[in-house]
Image 1: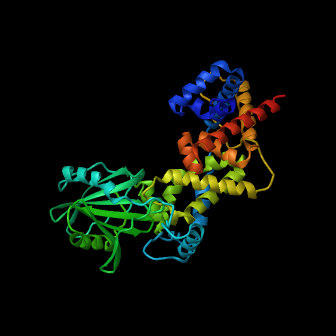
Image 2: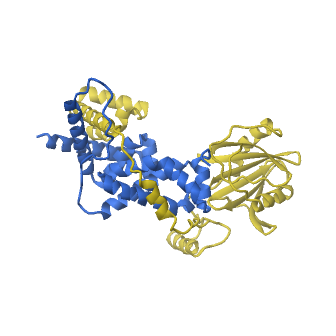
Length: 256
Length: 184
């Protein structure tokens, strides 16, 4: 039901033209017949225009600011990386949280975290497109950022792109390695969790390993980034490459 | 180094390359200072707050995910730092818009009287913005200073879309009431 209160609550988005068209039509219809809401809309529009003009005024930045900032920052210790949200161990706080959940909901399915899990099969479509497009030397669309770009011996980096998988921004690096097309996907570890796959230690590195539909997957966490490595091969063949990538955590840089 | 993206610079700065952070400061000083100026309402506090924002950004670099764009993260950290500083600072306010550019508009049609009126209007609007509660001021400043869409604003504030819209709407209404009172 379209009430005056409902309309007024949405006037700011409506006036900006960012409201869903169906909702906007309802508001338009209401404003035509409601003088009060129509006046509120007009007033908000006027004030908004005044503020837009006011905020256009240039602001002079003091010339001393940069010097002050760098003097202050140079005295600080190097930034400390955030702790890795790892699922390979059982931190005390997770154990405590698990205990609370069990206490509250009894036995049954326990969800360790509210974050969604990576669905490894959802990467298949992007990897398949890469298999069709990628040959050595192919340059795919470059994203505006690179996070973690390992280049282990024998694997040629062919391309990089940004995409979205499970609504998350993803960096997709593609490689040619021993005749195979390999995809390395990188996601924000704070937004999505690794799935419950088989844990495997290889060369001292802890990974999650899985197979789906003829593809093998190796997953790991580095800093705040979750990495998903996949190829049309067996896990046994993929693990050495994953281990080499973890070992060769190359410094970040842009492709020339 | 100046050809590197913000995300790469941030990553390197987090690894201890201070010169990379300096490039970020140079690139974003106007944005951060502008935000602080609109939140603080005076140039003296704005410079102190901008310094504090950059210090906070540096300290938080270890929490920044280079897979995500740098600017929204910078805006979020800076605006939240300003919120903290608002609650900590004294009630002293200087509302003279000294920080504004002293350049006159180039149009020949602008007489000195019009320029004075324009500056007076500017001062009134800035004063009205300063009367807003911190959360409403933050929403309004981010919306207009950073020209964020409502969706981007909701993400920056980490609130639902409707909450962001309600804050802006209330801020506009309160600014209007203040401007009307001031003209009585």
